[in-house]
Length: 169
Image (cartoon, rainbow, N blue to C red; front, side, top):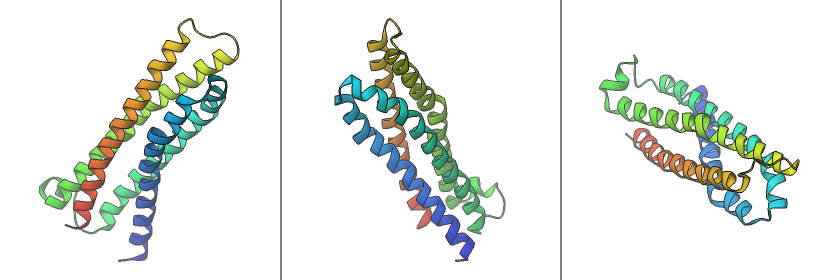
């Protein structure tokens, strides 16, 4: 294995582990802990932590995707893109890439805007100008966030298993 392939694989796997591990940490540790915290504590933490965490997770996702695509070509197992559809290894890799892109798009299209909306609502509450339905809105947004993270983790589990199959096939 060339040094470049090893380096690319190290970055790809490291970023992927931090991305998926971060999603799991958020879903099963951070969100439940914040849910049980007093609103006066939860609000300021969420305003600071939420947007920063989403940006971090999305950058890790982008690094994972880019290095994964580069690794496909460095693996020397396909000589053209059509082999992603006609070889079993290519099919497994394509399936994993598609799943990864779905998780990323969910993060950009749902998780990021939901997090920003939570932060904006909490800032309005702290400023004394809450929306009339602030408690119900925040609860609905928190449920949406939990459900999205659960779905992303389920897809990520399938992607990880798929990549393990590709690695050892």
